[in-house]
Length: 111
Image (tube, rainbow, N blue to C red):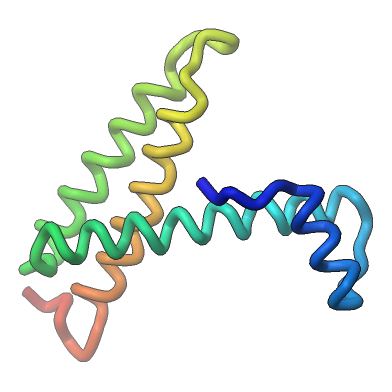
């Protein structure tokens, strides 16, 4: 997760002339942090694991990540580990991007 706080983000936006409602700015901040974490996760996955060899392999990996996220969602509200659940959500997004990049290009998904 980024080291920039919402207040720092808000100040940078003000200095750049970017304005919005408090709710919009908070959403932009959270999405920006999540996208940064997503890029980090994709970079780690690419360096650690080769590209998916087929649509079946890519789907299996993506489904495994979705199943891990589901395990966190099924925990009783108030007892969830939000950081771990968030991490699983980022991994789902990263594997979906990997699927699109590795499988869904110029006929790559035909395997």
